[in-house]
Amino acid sequence: MNNAVRTGDTTIACDVLVIGGGAAGVAAASAAGRAGAGVVLLERYGFLGGLATTAQVGTICGLYLQDPAAGEATPVGGGFAQDFARRLQQATGLKPIRVMDTGLWVLPYPPPAFARVADAAVAESKNVTVILHATVADVQTEGSRLHQVRALAWNEALLFRPGTVVDCTGEATAVALAGGSAENGGADQAPALVFVLENVDPGLAQRGLLEVRRELHQAVENGALPALCERLSLVPGSGANGRLAFKLSLMPAHPHRALWQQVTDWEREARALLEPLRQFLVKNIAACRNARLDSVAPQLGVRSGRRILGRARLSDENVLGTHKSPLGIARGCWPMERWTSSPRPEMTYFAERDYYDIPMDCLRPAELDNVWVAGRCLSASTGAMTSARVIGTALATGWAAGTAAAFQASGQSLQDAVTNIRKQMEM
Image 1 (cartoon, helix red, strand yellow):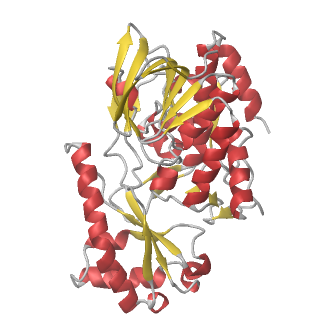
Image 2 (cartoon, rainbow, N blue to C red):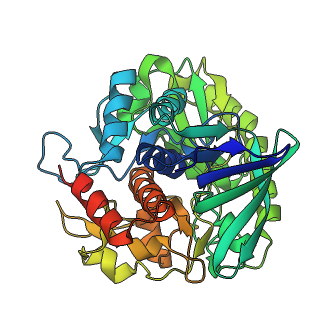
């Protein structure tokens, strides 16, 4: 295969072009590189991790089976997602924690550690060229193949000629620019902004937010704070050393409002609330008497966006019925988690200690032969996506898409790719 090479002042050829360096993109680039492909990974920020780092999500969901009776977390399967989780645990000393009586397990992490582990995982493949501060602007197709991608990288125009493309943008950006069929799920889920307070009594995390919610409700009733402030929750696993991470959920997007405009308004609205909210907590909550604002996530945690209409579609019934497929290339184990206008998520569970398969064709746009997707832009119904969008599952679908793209670029059969992926999924 061809390594990524510069063929002119602005042209780069590669076997596999991965667009988006979040959890799915890191997994896809690592998989393709380790399969021997020459890979280019484009990321719009100055570091890897996507929303796991920029939105400071703080926990990885979708790695472990739901099991209320288990004394420790049970991985849903093997492969890159679990390897990444183990490396993250070694880097941080943190272990999976059970967050609900229903038996859901998550892996807490500090966002800088996620970025470091992502860097190391990509570097180990030896065949990946990472280009940061890169944003895709245009694509061109020839028939059913995407053959050219234009991007700006630190304000320099670059032209890519890939053999295959893996779209891990979270918004199916490359697919949409190529004219592929997609649906806009931007109004499906409410976003959230994460911020961290320091000098907080650690006991507040242990007690939950009962006292905080009581005071916030009273303040909203009295008109002292906007109603959004009642949508405050804790990020599980935070609170060590007096640093407590909070998550402020906003209202869902208006279905007829342009998403670019909605996101801008969300960002400004949420950040405008932070200082009044901090002052209120300091004044009214004893555990926050000396609290200071330590950090604010650089980006909102947007839970849903554009997703493809693929050659197969993950349905609500597939998720709730824990459907298995001979073409399954990733396992989903997180329940449906809908963030709507209610302050708390609506959780819909399936069978305990079980999972569903995501078939390979959910990662394939209907009209494009050499394009794959992973993460939250895969082909799924609205309800199914509320389960499949989480970081653990994104790592798994990213690995599958990267493997398939590398096999396709080298002329190997996709059935061989499925066999390879499924072998790695086993423990």
